[in-house]
Amino acid sequence: MPFGATPVPGSSRGDLVVIGGAEDKLGKRAVLADFVRRAGGEQARIAVVPTASSLGDEIVEVYAAVFAKLGAAEVYGVRPQDRAEAFDPALVAELDRATGVFMTGGNQLKLGTVVAGTPFGDALHDAHRRGVTVGGTSAGASIQSSHMVAFGPGGATAKQRMTQVAAGLGLLADCVVDQHFAQRNRYGRLLMIVSQSPQLLGIGVDEDTAAVVTTDEDGRQRLEVVGRGVVTLLDGSTMVTDAHAAKEHRPILASGVVLHALPAGSHFDLTDRTLLPAPTVGDPAEADELAVANRDLSKLARDIAADDASPSVLRRRVARRSRGARP
Image (cartoon, rainbow, N blue to C red; front, top):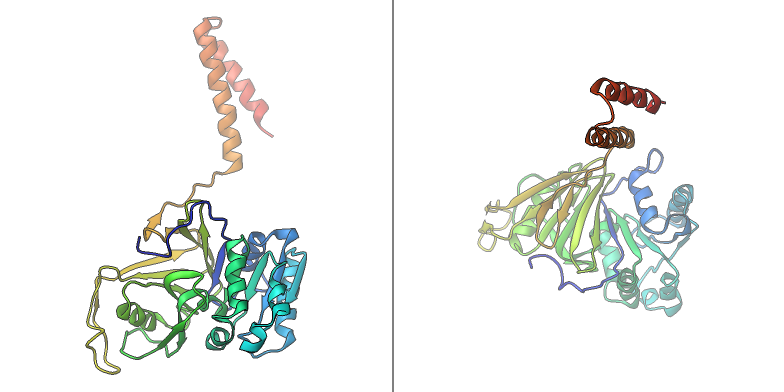
């Protein structure tokens, strides 16, 4: 199995909402609305973790206003500012009553150095395992993967040493997440990481877009794309690369990388790394018309079988019913 940890049958793990940053907070707010729905809707109790942000309480107030507008019952801030606070039992316990946890943008390296490998980080894993929806934007997206982009410039060409990688929380195993992907031209740095570690699945998430990861009862993970942009996946499982030999800052050979560009509505099996067919959503009006037609055909078949009417009578009967079915 190329992706993720060994499946846990009967798992009740919550959803992961990995947002590429700059999500809409004033218009349709499709990405944030999806997060609130998954976190419990009108019963949602959302803990906002603003550790990555350089802003003060105002960042929590922004998300509190948006989530309240979207129907959440309660929004509160939980902000460990250093590793000592991330060991504080009282602060860690604040996550116990949450149905959703949302990590803001900012500096992902700061977020990682404060919470990874602490009781607070362990509490995030526990919350996810018991069914809490865990989401994050920008830095709060990158931290969710096992390997995290710490810093580095963008660019279309993968070059040796163009970025640095640090450990993330590992909510998503065997992958690396990058955000603001198309907007900041981060294809090259994600490809560099995958070239150096071909076992990792590279996940690049555009702005105002979310890669939503769900886990079924068999422990299989699936990704759905929500929002206005694209989620780009780089699968280097069978690639050929010279990353081990490329000199400092030189372009890296990367051949045979499988690329998936997934717009909104796309579904992807992360366990098998294969594209899934999108579910078919029917038009309710069309479904009603089809139901009426099926009832008429059933009646027509019964009448013919009973031989109780001529074809002209049957045609008039069907016409009357069709007129009656119209609004």
